[in-house]
Image (tube, rainbow, N blue to C red; front, side):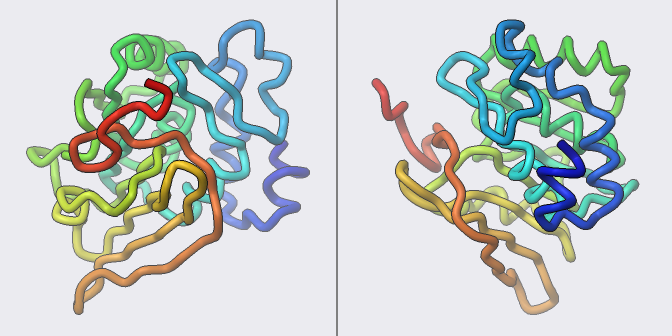
Length: 208
């Protein structure tokens, strides 16, 4: 996976590649999908959610560029796979999930992997985690129609925010960095994510 799907397709950060090699993706899937863990595709994890394609996980992580002492906020814990990658690269990871069952399963995986630098919370991720802000990195693993204001407010000087922005059909990956004159935006291509359900994003499940 690391050689054929990531390095061969433009992922250059050696730390990101090493983290992707270390985290066992099969641990973050339902047992009946374990044999497909290293396929070049997103996979369902239950509750209408998915684990992202490995290339997208690597691309977003590389764009975030977490450093060893950074505090990183993740919106949408899901299976915990992206969280575990971040925990190998950053000083501390704060992750928020709105679905209790998914969060409990992810916390168990973190314990099995011995990852002790992760803080979890059940709640509305679009509101962020203000009492632990500012963050050097914020990553959103669900699509929003726009960037939630609380997240930009919780971004540290020099910090980066990576988020898919668009409608329910298609989105574009947006990277914001807080510079001396404000937020600087960069676009990193088309993506497809499940919606961020929040009063600050999409207000209801598309399948309800």
